[in-house]
Length: 212
Image 1 (cartoon, rainbow, N blue to C red):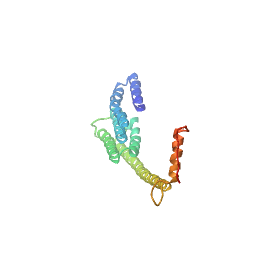
Image 2: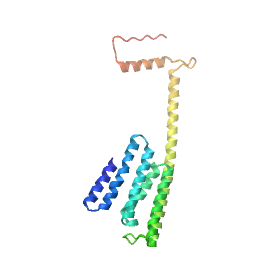
Image 3: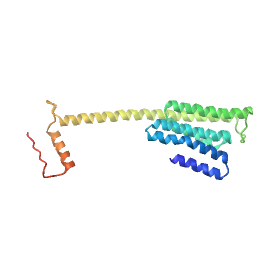
Image 4: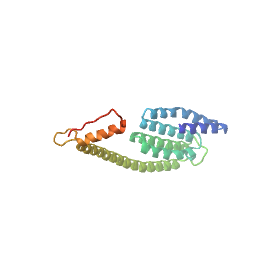
């Protein structure tokens, strides 16, 4: 909801500033972002992350194409979005967003170079597009490698944690059961009695007899 509030606030501010095109882009872009909340509410975290990064990337490129091209401030959001997607999204989603970003950057440089369309800023050249693409590619590739390493470490720690839990359960079973008969022993009885007393408190009607 925080992102939605910020997006709507920015839309309102740009509308008051008579930047109607920017306000329209932000308002129409805020509508599909609502789906992220419902994905999170249903427990689909990866799908929510994919939708959020995809929508934010589309918003950023809509602003870039509409206004100053490669010199627009919105292009600074592209590396940040790709970095976060490298950590939170699936590998296929990350590579799809990376390819989409590089294709848009190169397309902006190409249409300005060929004269099909010219953005107001003069630095929207093919060389600038290639430079931005290389920067984005190297930055996101390094972050992706770091993300893969962190994911491997997380999976390894998760497996170790499961082994500790299993070992603890086995140790508790050996403590509470007789090795010969595999039946609950006196230690298990005392523990169950202590738990019962703690949960029910002392009353005048409860009685327990232990036969040894």
